[in-house]
Amino acid sequence: MPKIGVVGTIGGWSSELLADKVAEKTGYRLLIDPKKICLDLRAKTVRYEDTDLAGLDGLMIKKVGARYSPDLLDRLEMLRFLHERGLRMFSNPFAIMRVLDRLSCTVTLAGGGIPMPPTTVTEDVDAALNAVADYGKAVFKPLFSSKARGMKVIPDGPDAPREIAAFKQENEIMYIQKMMDLGGQDLGVAFLGGEYLTTYARRGQDASWNTTTRSGGKYQSYTPSDQTVALAHRAQALFGLDFTCVDVAETPDGPVVFEVSAFGGFRGIQTASGLDAAGLYLDYVLKRI
Image (cartoon, rainbow, N blue to C red; front, side):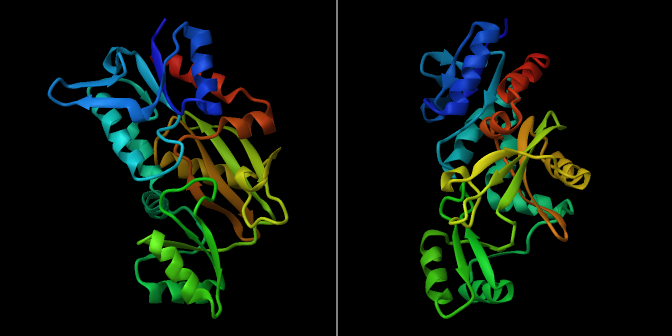
């Protein structure tokens, strides 16, 4: 049987689940903490503790850090070194890098003609103030974040300059998106190997402006429109990821895309649809190794 490593978070639910699935199917279990990967350019090796990763038959990249940050791009670069020397990886590290940075993902989606909420990106405070005045209420988002961490809702008004200045202290480049009325719900549209798998809804609590599970949101089963699935399919096709979920909102003017996930989520699929996403993903990988 092939030896497949899983890059993920030690103790993380989805990472441990995937590593367990690999062990059940292949008899080999290696969950790799990306913080402990060592690239030696002189020896041309990438090691994890006592394991030379080049000796594996493949890697499944579930997580490269518990929190999104620019450091994750550097960890992916070390894995890219191995990928370019022939080690099969799911997904390709370079493809993951293109969605991990929110701005890179957004520019690619915009270039592909994917409808998104009105968005402004700037380092200039006056331009940020003008965007808030135009949008009425805006969500300021860090370029590296997940589950709405670090995001701030800023309405137009006398407090906007102070709130923008506070956000800019932590985020030199300000990613500003018009706050849309989503009816308390958005969608995760999942794809495996570029083929539609399923959709789940995230239903937010009344007290929260976002739908993330971190803020009390709940996963629910959902049947999207054909238009929504077609749009999400176009969005994920721009990146070539092996497994991903596209964050979509259905609005009165049609569906819009927020982002394409770097890693996809097993829990939402399992909770809402009952599908064993980790097992399906592993079967997909085994057919290609």
